[in-house]
Amino acid sequence: MSLRLLSQVAAFWASSAAGYLTDDGEVVIPGASSYNGLNLVPQMGWDNWNAFGCSINESLVLNTAQTMVDYGLRDLGYNYVVIDDCWSEGRNSSGYLVANTQTFPHGMGYVADQLHSMGMKLGMYSSAGIYTCGKYPASLGYEQKDADFFASNGVDYLKYDNCYNQGQSGTAQISFNRYQVMSQALNNTGRPIVYSMCSWGQDQPWDWAYTIANADRMSGDIYDSFNRPDANCPCTTNPCSWPGFHCSVMNIIEKMSPITSRTQSGYFNDMDMLEIGNGGQDDNEYVTHFSMWAMLASPLIMGTDITQISPQNLAIYANPAVIAINQDPSASAGSRVWKYNCDMIDQYGNCDYQLWVRGLDNGDYALAMINNANGSLNMNASLSDVFYLNAHAGTATTPPQLKEAWDVYDLWANRMSNDDAAMLINGTSGGNSTTMATYNATQTSYADGIQANSTALFGAKIDTVQPGGTLTANVPRHSTAFYRLRPAGSPVDKRKVEL
Image (cartoon, rainbow, N blue to C red; front, top):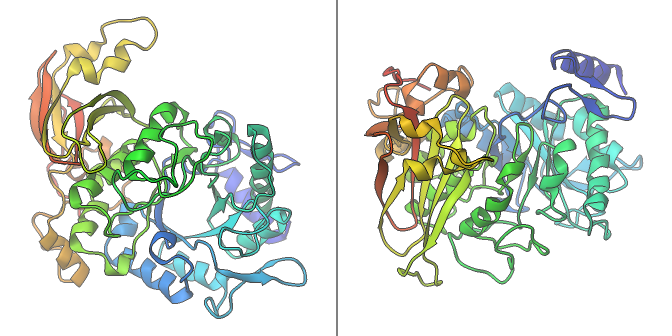
């Protein structure tokens, strides 16, 4: 290990509350749930793959990052810029990866320096196989050399795929052993690097990956569809023997239901990149997509062309009240309380409606009512429904929450208007908007903002449900009513928080 990396590791572990690195590269942080002390809430950022595939280059990366800064997305928490597959042109004579000199003429260290100067972080990609999914050299058998390459170039995040794995899968132990090699190699560099596995849920990583990684993909690849069934994504629940690809938003939500208890601070079940902006769903469907990725504590990695984003789609990504649920220090995932089928089927034969609930760190609750019917539904959730899991966590009992009144805050009520979002895109807002609900998480964390009752993180109060009462909502087709419930009378600061 170089002197530079030794100094980095000393500084990092010194700040990590009695954390230390063992001789074999294992990180030990007594009492911490994160294996390396990183990623205590889900990572946020942008990845080029869904919008650009292999058409990636230095200018695109840096222009996207600057646009994220200009639109306030960095300050909302989207700070990782992830260069996905196809960035390499092979290995040099010493066995180290080499960036493509045509698409990245200044090298990856330059890209990292530029991103860091913007207050952003660099993510890169490889695979736990002999090739990446795009058939470029990957890291199986080269883990330490590749980890050293990433660390020496200032990389902050590694997405680590599952292609061409030489048959080293099929049991949890085999997959664990293969992915653990890169985990230890990253730790050996001394540089803090978020390790985001992409095993597609193969061999049930939610049962073992939390000891070696900060996140892992729990499904086959997403595509920009709300609920269209696809033969390429054959499983409809987890565990799944063949993850596939072309998995819809509702398919992935369904697969999360059995494994929500496997989410914890430092390790998150990655539901794949956000498709908002890619054109395959309507606005209501994108609202459900974003709401449920937040509700289920998935990483929020934007997968669209940010430089060409529409005002309507920017307004979804830039909703701090929804992001605050995702970034809640509880680091838990919501649980489904019920799901009922219905008769108003769509063209794919789907019709159901669902209730999901999540307890939050400060005693609030998040509640999501999903309408997967082919038209609007009047939905209701009694407090007995909302606190059903509290009542049946072991011995059946009457939870004290049923005896309280609860203020209901609509997390989409203060969504940025399309006009405000257009002004932001055009650089003409000038901070003069009176309706733009914005937030700067680089100055005040979401946890601190909630503690300070910052109004941008709460949406708008729409109701108070009395003890034993029922919450009702008219939910549009394929949309989600997304609420924060607070004990009645809890204060909310009326000051506006600006970007």
